Image 1 (cartoon, one colour):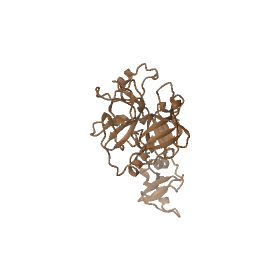
Image 2: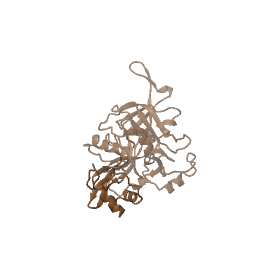
Image 3: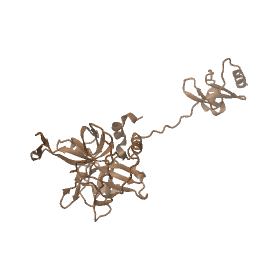
Image 4: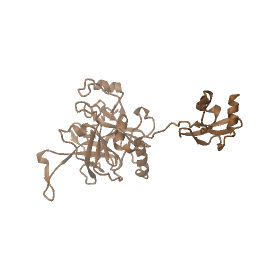
Length: 370
């Protein structure tokens, strides 16, 4: 009876403005709410039953004799889109639109076309050999640049590579990045100095764990048909469906092309690979000195299923990408880390990009992190 009298009294409050059910309103604390019938608003119904309702600011009006109250708005689950996915979407819309996709060469030793892998980068080091000092047209002494590792363009000023490529070369850090050409002797390229080397903070030279790094460049890379960024893998590789027609796993680089002569390639190669089960891969690398704790979940094993061809990632491919090629676009899923032998029967090991996506985003796109 008391509750009915309370409702009736509310009809005649001076200055009270009635709001319709479903209207937006403000709670006593200033937070947004929605006008809802009292029996359908558990928080306000509980307050009424316990005698905690003293203010009228949370009242919207009445629907007949049923009070309509300002009920806390339902909390909507916030869907955060990863900065790397936003960047990927931007690249596809602004840079890659209108570009015809090329046919991939999925054979060992096949040279890549000039526009086939526009995100590939060569990482240059100063050759400290005394005999490799030359004079330019003005008489200045210049040293030869040797390209010992690969990398992947992921943003206008960032290249993804392996940590061992930037910390383990006899105290000789990389100095520049070369992009835009599959031939290291070609003059059709961009060379950009490296401003900052960012190895993963948990990487140690004595092991191969956390073998991932970023190179920040002094200036933006100029996009063209032969120079573009690639999207990063932001989901687990377990979600990849290789039953989809036109889906391939490949590795590219300027590595050894002939294991008998050990000659280095000038052009990109694109062998096809398949994932190797972790248990098989772990047994191969058991007792490996640089793996004191064995392979971990942040490593990917892959090898060529063709034992005759034995396409593989070799020395000069270190730091280069393990790629997922599909009809929806190219994605870098791994960074070439180490292997047991070049062109051998065992799988090579790659650092999983997905496992380090938070770290990558915090450096490359810090302004987009919520």
